[in-house]
Image (cartoon, rainbow, N blue to C red; front, top):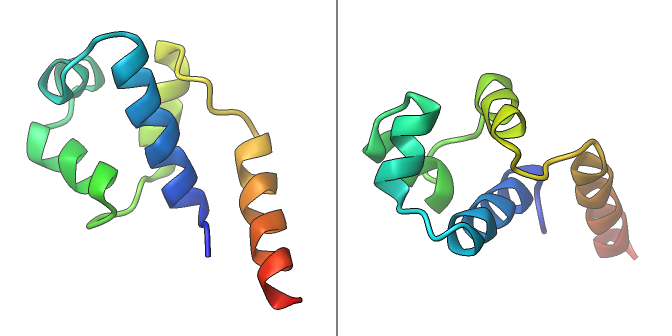
Length: 79
């Protein structure tokens, strides 16, 4: 099952790589601790709407289609 949480983590990891950032630098930009960001990326804790809002403001390409993609993934698994 591909959840919205997993999709957001993948997008953020790709953003980090594409922009040659470190987790530490992104955590500073987002104003969250490095352990918090690491926990979100690993799936140990969940992304919340404030996190997603900050990411969008930074230019991370998270759109409403992320939520639709997760829903379509879940529908496909029921078949």
